[in-house]
Length: 451
Image (cartoon, rainbow, N blue to C red; front, side, top):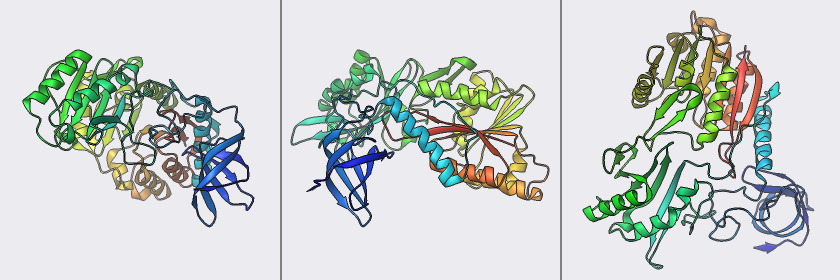
């Protein structure tokens, strides 16, 4: 590491929570631990022709948004610090402002789209919000010790975590007892992972095991579950092998009370990490879509029905489309369970190979809800743009009047928005950030497009 003698003025921050400055040579410098408005000294770790990267070592002027004592004892820049959260040194309100700006900037710089109205960001609890997590497990023979947690910053090693502030307190309190449990298991060096999945009434833990578990280890899991109120699931191979250690017990599910919907799920299913934000997000999405009883709606990338089933309480007909036959069947079951089978239908479709002709086959709908994975919905947006440019490609098909697009990646949202606005003739009427993952660089967002 090379000591830099000059003081640098930090002008901005990126999504990796690095301050951005320029040195006396005009070179951009990315600084771990620095915030906008601060004057800092750093040690340089990497040098390139037109940028450098370093770590904060001295602070002469401090930002008013700096959190001097982050709540988590495992957060920091030091070796061994947990890498799960990068932004704890920045006030939670300022984190949200950064993410809102990221959504704005991506829409404009990547998609050449400017939202007519920026809505207030969706935000919620900054701590104890995470109902889904994947903890690595490592038995360290040299220390004769088990570690359970996230990885260290920029390392493959598991952080020595005794608590975790972003999961609910009752889960954080399980970390040390879990370490003791694994330490006493015969297969302790063949248990690489514990996945957390919480419902409204159940704490489910999925234990990944590379070898079959002996009877003694299974009994230890049962005893732990009974003592701590945990439901154990086992995963011998891929996600499709997940099964309950013992049948029976309460169901893993979450509710969307505003719509009278209950969503059962398996612990390896995709559900939102933050149920507090998900509840608000579903409500906002449906209000923005403003569905009427006589309308047909398509929910693209419908998953288990997180948006489809609430939509079915408002619309005449809802079609849920997903890429997996297994998910489609699960969605049907959830609709049946909630008494919404009469006006819902579900189909499996390769959503990354959409065409105008396929749009016509799926039929017109007044409104769409689009909630794609990180790769976005490029093929879908392109199919819409192509069909609008050349209606003969989708005979009889009519574009939706309104689209609500829920995104987990601002850059792919911006790319798709560019097609919808600049080619397909939509306006981006509203947009906002969604702070699903406080203290992390992850940005979710929601945008509305109208014709």
